Length: 85
Image (tube, rainbow, N blue to C red; front, side):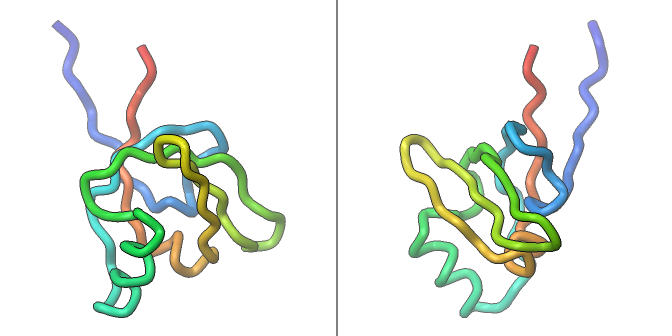
């Protein structure tokens, strides 16, 4: 049996195409409300689609819905990477 290693990074640090589960949002109530309105909340699985050059918006997908968040917001969303077998 192999030992499972946990990789937790920010959404901004994820590579395009990586999948992860949101484990924490490091921000105030306002940030949590904005992200919740986009369906981005703790426990949800997301896939990073792309990011713009020079700290621009980050595009992500949850189920069949895509959303773009600013780099600063993406930096405050911590994600546990889901490794493909």
